[in-house]
Structures are given as structure tokens and as C-alpha cells.
Image: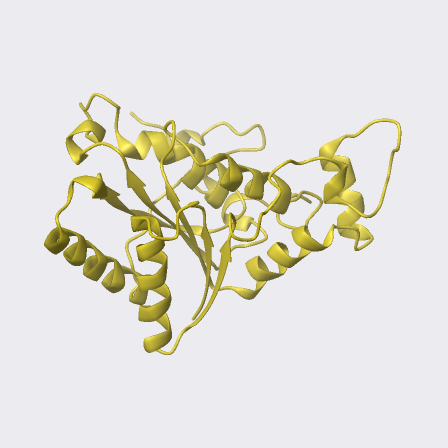
Length: 239
């Protein structure tokens, strides 16, 4: 298995850093291949604009999807974007490693998605999305830490259900481009854990990443469940 880890934490000695190191160690010891994009260490530029491209379709007006489609057809992505796209197509599984900030992705990771997940059939588009997406057949998983304890992210928790908070990433990003989405691995409030508890969570993560190809996945609706107007087919509608 070839695993691509996109790591988004600015402190190498953070628990996120420990998780990425544990994942690489576990996967390579099990005979898998890994590639890590450490976005902060790379000084990855998260700003999506004309710097994404070496080609220009319309110099007078920047329409993102049109420029992406043109770049996809003319090998016109900037080297830093193309390198990340190559890793996406190389891998069998993608791991997004990040701390949840403001109920979402850190800006540098969201910017990575904005720049790398390009339209025009490169990563999505051309009528290919969801279970018919360009990246169908690959797996993806969010691995993250939260600042608060698990109770805050329960269905009746103060922050709301974690499943709901991660829906824009799991469904709106990963599933949208075709990934089979693995249930997230979450370490709640690692700063509050003692050394023994941290070691146990790292051992749990080691087991998860080495079993990534069989780990439980999230079931989302399939394109076949909907008609041409994206209405749920009557036979599948709730009674």
C-alpha cells in the first residue's frame, strides 16, 4: 500500500507530529510505502490565485475552474501544485493529519485543498464526482486532534457532533472527488493526557494506519440513488 500523509501542524514536537512519525514508522515496518507533505516545513503557499498556473486562458478575468481545466489540458500547473497532484495519483490512501482549528481545517491545509484539488478532470470534473470520481478506488482518512474532550463533541455536546463538523471535509472534499472515506481517527485533548495515555493512543493509531485498507468506512449516498435532477429516487425515499 502506498500512503500519502499531508501533515498540517507548525510544531514538530506536537502530538500531531508524533502521530505522523508513528504512522510512517508503522507503515514502513509493515512493508508499505509512505510520502509525507509537511506543509509548514515546505512553506507551502495556501493562497489560490494565478500562481497556481504556468498557463493563462483569460488574462483579463480569473475564473478558477476555467483556468484549472485549461491547465489540466495543457500541463499548466505550477510545479508545487503538480508535485502534490502527482502524490495524490501515486497513493492508494491519503491521510490528512491536522489539529481541528475553529471547527475546521487549518488554513494551510484548506489552501492545499483549494490549490491541489483542481477541476477539469485533473482531480474532479468532466462529469466525474462522488463514487464515479477521478480518485475512486483510493481511500482517505482524517486523523486529527481536538482541543476539548470527547464529551464536547458528542451528539448532545456543547460543540456539536464531530461527524457533523467533519462532514464538509469527509463528504464535501474527500468523497466528492471519489475517495472511499475511512472513519476518522481522533485524539481528544492530547494536552490533557499523561504519558501513558498518550502512548496508548499512539499504539491505537499505529494499529489503525497499518489496517487502513480494511478500516471501517463512512457510507454516503451513491450517484445511482438520484435521478437526473439530483432528486432522491422514489424507491429509496424515506417512508
